[in-house]
Length: 446
Image (tube, rainbow, N blue to C red):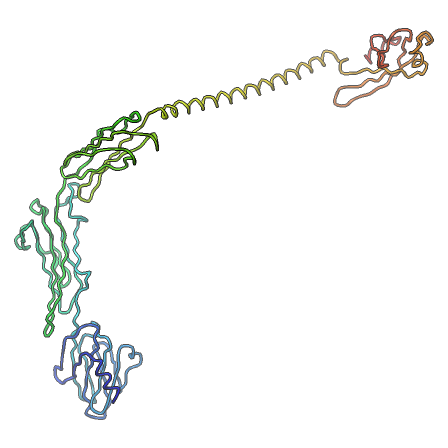
């Protein structure tokens, strides 16, 4: 009994099962709702919704405890829906043996704050000549509600309010359902400066004295011509410290023109009207760069067009950069060529020298040998100090060495006339003083 009293303090609303058409009521989503079914016998109770059985043999069906509670005593059975949702809407039946009673639940719900949503076959109410079609569609979509919502389409033109029926010659209903309405209008200049408006309303039943209202719109419609912007100069060269005057023009009135990318530190002044914008740059400098690009942007509706001009700044430092770079390049090229010529010339000289040496060797085969004559006879060596005491002829050993890759050394016994001054200061035989009684041998050696 104590639990029953605690539960009753939490319940917000209740509904009773009755025979015949039963009892019915409107309830908001999210509340806790009690369904009361009288128990006037000891027979088991069964309660079911339009889609499932919830209570069977006076007990909750397995798996139903998350959303439902069930209480019973000798006089009443109570099904408790913990959090009412729109899926709980419908007719409920309570069976006690052969007796049955009914209760009907109506769940109140409305579209969310994101509803309704208005769309068109144009991405923007600003319609340019190149995308203009023969008609314009306006669609209003809303989330469903209970009771059903009501969709109303109207047109606002300037300060006057006109119902869609006043433009029946231009617009007609394509679709009209509970949660969506679409209107199609023939494209006409009379639709200029008009706004399509969708109102969604819902009135709750008694005893609720409130309802829902939401709206969305598309417009105002603007039919615009294609436009462009043009700058009077595209590439200019000025001296550092001088001024520049630039003009950006458009072919359509109402275009918003502005200048961007003017370097920081440059003083300038902008003037103009609906068709052009003039910027006067008082002094240009090349502290940051010798070239800069300034842009003119024209905005009209949701489109933007742009044009740019390149400003080249020539000053003292600019002239230095202009002439210094080619000079460095020229010097580098000449240096490279000079070094190359010297290397080639050095190799040519070396090659020519080797060719001359080879040619000389081929013309004079004797030059490939070195002749060293040493005294081997002791009497000769002794007689060098006292030439008068030397015998008339003595012998020396001649060593012949080749300068070729494979040196060849031969020793020959050559007679030497001791009475002649045929030795140098180092004790070596002077070749010109050799006597050669055996000419064939000396000729080969020499």
